Amino acid sequence: MSLKVLQTVSLPVLISMLCEPGNISAFVVLSDTATEVALREQALGQPPYLSSFYVRTPEFVSPQHLLSHLVLYAVKPYRENTFGVSSLRLLQALGPITALRLVASADVDQLWSTEIPQMLQMLYEHTEKSLDQEEWEDRLLQFYSRSLEAISDDSWLEQQTVTTLERIENGSDEEEQKAFLYKFFAFTLRTSSSPDLVRRMLSAVLNASHEEPQQREGIAVALAIVSLRHLRVALDQLEVYGANLTDKDRSCVLTLTKEHQHREWGLVCSTVYLSYRKIISVTEDALSLPLDSILALAVEHYGHCIVEKDTTLTLAYLDALTQMTSFLGERPMPLPCEVPHKLDLVASMVVSASQEEGGEQRAGRVVFVETLNRVLSSAWRREAQIFQFPLPAVVLPVLSSR
Image (cartoon, rainbow, N blue to C red; front, top):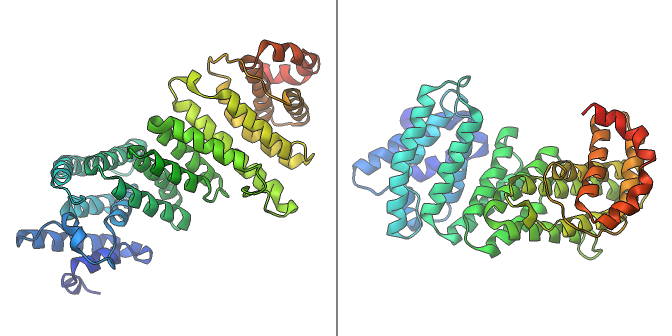
């Protein structure tokens, strides 16, 4: 389709075309054309496309889908040279994005008229090599978060989280975009003032696919970001998810055939304990965390991972657990906790450490033992003295190399 023909296409149709996954190669052309059409319509006195979206028919792309699409395409701003510039220019030409409230419209308009030119200038002043990618992504997320705060509408936010979660589950985006999507999802929830919405959406993302390491990392990062404002809700949902794993009526693992359960246990435990680690890492008051409940949950999972006597499953479980405890061991939090099967857990770590050749994994087992020794009760520590004799031969070489 020639550029002249494109300029005769209606703006809603252009928007629908540029949001189609199969039109990535034509994104810059479609985006720049849509920008010209939007500015031309505004010059003729028509309201901005997104500010009047509520009067449009539902067959066109929703504002939530469009916002996530344009922000996501700006993550790698120098793709095809101008992906970032084209995305932001179009967003500015279409905006501001609002709900049915004039106050929100004014707030978002003021924010976008200031922030988008500054972000464009940042891209003009840099190249792909000189741009700090982490700083740029943080800038995009802060812009997005402030936009949602200005809109201040939980029904709008719910549609945004649903749209983002659908895109996460679809899995058609590139790797870097997928990682960004989890943060995008989390920033949406963190903005919400509705605990019920946060609870439902966290439950949904926890039950999404965690097959790949990046998916497990993304879920954990999302929970940590949300916990900055909704710590109690995030911890509650993680505990519910972890507890349901051992409930035969609710478990996503126990419904599988026996031969498939072992691998799934390793994956879900990795998600759970990596999530706890991420939450612990961003929690200023570590003493506010319910460590006794967290460790008790670990014991519930222990019954399905170590008692099975499957070596691969045991190692997967212990690896998942050390993701949390290795970080926990670095923080000063002496809490009295009573945990059943405590000696079995330590014994499994010791045996595992003695059998593994990899220094990093062995060190993780050692940190686990050290951590439990620090956070559990004095009675526990006295009981665990029986392990002082087998530990040195296994542990000392590892400790000396740390």
